[in-house]
Amino acid sequence: MGEKRKENAVVVSQEELAGGIYSMWIETEASMSAKPGQFISMYTNDKSKLLPRPISICEIDKEAGRLRVVYRVTGQNTGTEQFAGLRGGDTISVVGPLGNGFPVGQAKGKKAFLIGGGIGVPPILELAKQMDCAKKQIVAGYRDMHTFLKEEFEENGEVYISTEDGSAGTKGNVLDAIREHRLEADIIYACGPTPMLRAIKAFAEEKNIVCYVSLEERMACGIGACLGCVCRTSKKDYHSNVHNSRICKDGPVFLATEVEL
Amino acid sequence: MNMKVNIAGVEWKNPVTVASGTFGSGAEFAEFVDLDRLGAVTTKGVANVPWPGNPTPRVAEVYGGMMNAIGLQNPGIDLFCERDIPFLKQFDTKIIVNVCGKSEEDYCEVVERLADEDVDMLEINISCPNVKEGGIAFGQDPKAAENITRAVKRYAKQPVIMKLSPNVTDIAGMAKAVEAGGADAVSLINTLTGMKIDIHRRTFALANRTGGVSGPAVHPVAVRMVYETAQAVKIPIIGMGGIAGAEDAIEMMLAGASAVSVGTANFHNPAVTMEIVDGIEQYLKENHMEDVRELIGAVR
Image 1: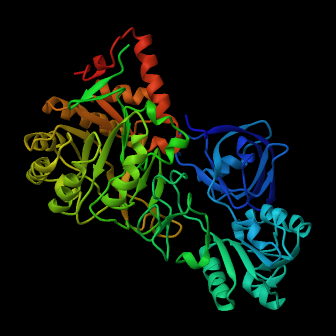
Image 2: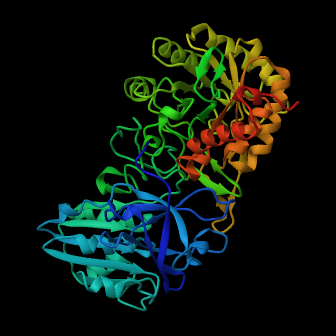
Image 3: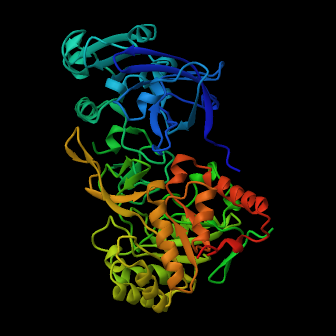
């Protein structure tokens, strides 16, 4: 029998951090082997919605056997609004941890950028907590003044903020914040929307900095079987034997130089 | 109690396999499922050369199901024989290799290559709705389906299952055509062609615009088509389409299927196939039935 399973996790707590952004702690076996940058598949109780929602892991508490997920409710009838309705003591079906996670150890002795944008911000928190590096510079990009997780980032490194509307930190995107503060790094870890990752990849190539990006795509199985969530790769991938890698299984974290964005 | 079924001379330990494309070659699901407990593993379609598949997004959720347009991405037959068959040989289950192609020559090349491989059955995909050049070109015209079946049979050393498309007006006619071409079994249904439009982005949900609909939403269509096929042909039927639990599997067998494939439900619960095997056994017990074969075509 396989060693993994779909499990009924128990909700410990839930709170709304900002408009539509929720934070939920769950008690789950998945916490035992979870690493920053990995995700879990979360299932709704609605029989008309079959597919899991892949949600990144925001914090890991191995001692208490808990994981924290911070996610956005994307609208009515999307399934995520059901997650937001869960309260302490409720259960939720999950599978995980899934994906490869960030190579945290690569940052040892280096000046690092930990960059999150939008709903790509949450996985940066556990990464920041676990990272042991010479200089930890967390750059978080938001739409507006609702800078969720900012205080928790401040306990784990230097924090720089950008907002699209300029209501907090640098007006613009994360790269605008990096330029305004004249920040420098030897290694980059980034998670966020594809246009942001594309810009960061170009920035890293221009400055010749090692850069890891965490990608997202519509997923079905979440475990590498269905080939729904592939990304284009520069080299031929061993599993697919074509220039495609599976984001759910071979990723979501890739060396920026190895993927086409 | 007997759970064994015989499909075209191949004995399966139980009537449950997986639908091609939902299970890879089993490696990913082996972490969740005891592959020894499956009647057979049906692999993702494999072609003569590697195929890159369609652009993303390739999948979307719809009410009671999903849509996909993967485009038959596959590593090609050489790597498949070198890596995937040896992996599956570690398990005590039958191996069904799903074969795809863009021309008669493509199909025959793969089938000939598999003749010397230690696999149990071949499933010929003439019904993929997501690849323009091939697959479906053979699956919507009875004469073309009969001809490709006959061509493949010339090279095949293993029993040949022809996988049929529901995107036809007369499923029984298609089944009779492949039976006339020499098919040893049929499997149905492949996915139903559909479309989903994202009203917020005002564009297609899938990059391919259309995709194949699967999941519980299509189950009644599949049951009807399996029933009609069972009335028309003598060869065994592997029934699939929206099977999400033992009840659906039993229903499909009562309609005339000798075995069933579980597809989209694997994405909802990676271990669902085990629950279906257990659920069928439980049903037989509760109904004082000694043999799972009593279910096959029992409703007429």
